[in-house]
Image 1 (cartoon, one colour):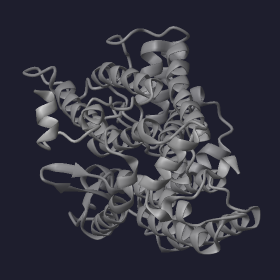
Image 2 (cartoon, helix red, strand yellow):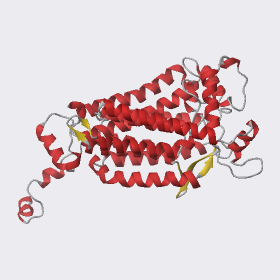
Image 3 (cartoon, rainbow, N blue to C red):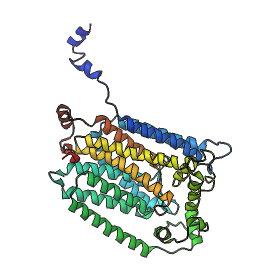
Image 4 (cartoon, rainbow, N blue to C red):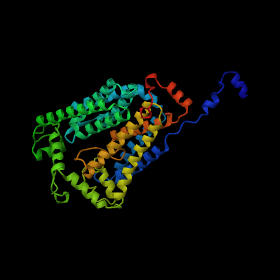
Length: 441
């Protein structure tokens, strides 16, 4: 019967074997790290959301967060099964849409904490800042993989990447310095991985410094001065004392935070708690209360009074719940992700998947390090979510996309020295993405 079907042309010779060919497996270590962070996210978000809990629905914050995590899991699984080569046509569209959203938010976005940060799309608040980070990684990976030369990366490729980072940094500059610094850090890492020559790297560094310095000076000179009471009022309501809508220029706030961070001679425990430092003070109290082993979830003392405990300061609650040991464990998970991505990248035969997997890992880990450094006082106070753990739809979606792309690379990119497999991958990729892995040259 089977032979009759083959003769009738219903099943081509070799087709049955092809249909039964198993789907390549994604990296189990990245999956394990992803699942571990998801579990921590569910526990800690509920622990940190006492301010949002209502008597009639104590599980409301957890359910809302769980829905976003479920959406993120669907995105991650879907992208992990998509061949990474399809990111080539997707990237220009994604970059264009993200930049348009960022420009719209810059002028017409919703005011949050005195700055225009988001807009609502199909009932979901969207923060373009999170998507722009992804766009930077995707564009740099695409451009640099197409600009490989025998001795590095072409000047045109480096210039396009640097110009796009400056554009994105300019769009985010009014929202704070950390996002701009994060974009620059991501681009530096990807340029080093992509084999950019030292002279060109130094030139990019100089351009970033000049443009960034000019931007800081401009903001400082053009910032309107407000009293402390009016600053608090604008931050909480988005209006001044006259009832007028105000987008708060945050350079004065940023400079004040930096000055306090650099110039404080009084120990933190001796400082009086004010409207300016209450976030960091309650954060330090939470971490001190955690000690070595923590108080365990549900026993947090500071979550009820720490502003933004469920987002910008959630690492403080992690430490209070699980202590120094738990904080180090979470840090270790993120660092393991970077190490695993590095191991995958070192085995890839092509430049495009190498830059993709490392760029996404650097994005996630660098953002996590920024968050932890801010919460622990290593960096000045600023807002930066902890990937997959902080509350926030845009951040969860962006991080899920990054994990999905890393899993896709681990599944489909050739990571062996088998010449037959390498040639097959080369034939399947577009010709412009055929450049070899620069770390192997």
